Length: 189
Image 1 (cartoon, rainbow, N blue to C red):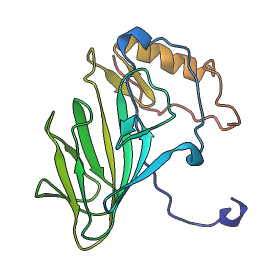
Image 2: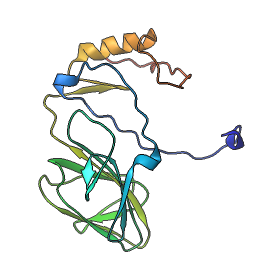
Image 3: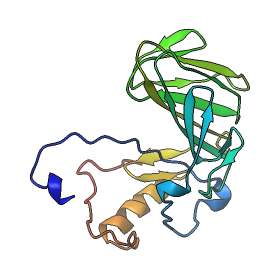
Image 4: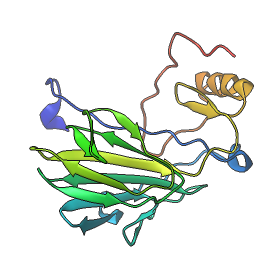
C-alpha cells in the first residue's frame, strides 16, 4: 500500500508447495484466488481454527485440490489447548511465533514437527499465545524433486520448466505484472 512505500517494515509469510499426484503432474497451470471471507473459521474450545485447505472440525475449505490435503491456521491463547485428530495419514505442525507443547514435548518457534501417523495429538500453548500451521495429506505416490518454484517426479521436467520460465512461456497470474528471474545457481539434474 501507498502508506508503506519507501519505508522499512517487517513482512513474513508461509509458502507451501504441494506435489501433484502423478496422474495430474502435467495439468495445465492455473491460478484461483480464494478471498479470506470464503475461508471457514471455527472455534474448537479455546482455539480458533481456519480451514485453509481440506476438511477439519466439521468445516470444508472451498480450495480445490488434486489429492487429499490439509492446511489449518490455528491460534491458541496463552494456556489454550487443542486436541487434534488424525485427519490424514501424514501430518505436521509448524510453530509460527512461539513454542508449543505437542503431546507434552516442547517444540520451539519456527520449527516443523512431524506427527505420528494415525495418532491424535494434544497441542497446548504456554504463557503466551501461539499461532501454528497444521499441514498434511496422503503419502506421495512417487519420489519428487524440487528446485526453486518447481516440483516434479522427473528431473528433466524441472530443467524444462526452468527454460520455459526463462522464456516467459508459462503465462501469468491474472493481475500480476512483476516477473522474477530464476536464481543464478541452477538446478543440476
